Image (cartoon, rainbow, N blue to C red; front, side, top):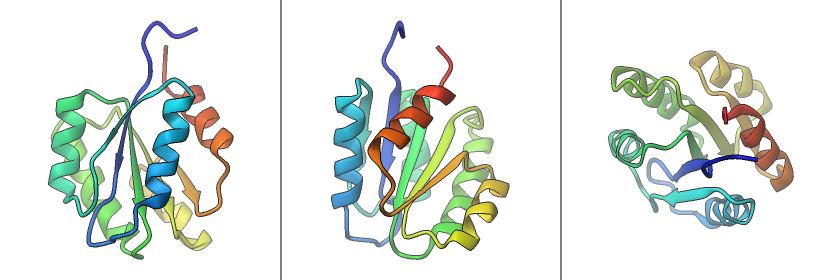
Length: 132
């Protein structure tokens, strides 16, 4: 049993205006006992990084449906490293082509959950990868 709940930031980067999936994942994580901070729509990489730092989260989850997942992930991973946040687990969900999953992982993304991923799998992955 964990001493403190896992803190997760859920963010919607870029111009993508669809956030239903992000909100549903946030609810599933809350129901699993995690503390979830949801940034809302149209966040910049700078805003996401700043919020992750301010909120002292262990996990940063991006929901991306726009197709811009590779450049966004590249910028985010670079900025998080610059800010000393490279120990945080970064997850990406959304419309992610199978061929891009390995590219995202090479950038430092810990796991990718394409559209249709099941909530228990997301919860389990986070719980298994965040140290007590």
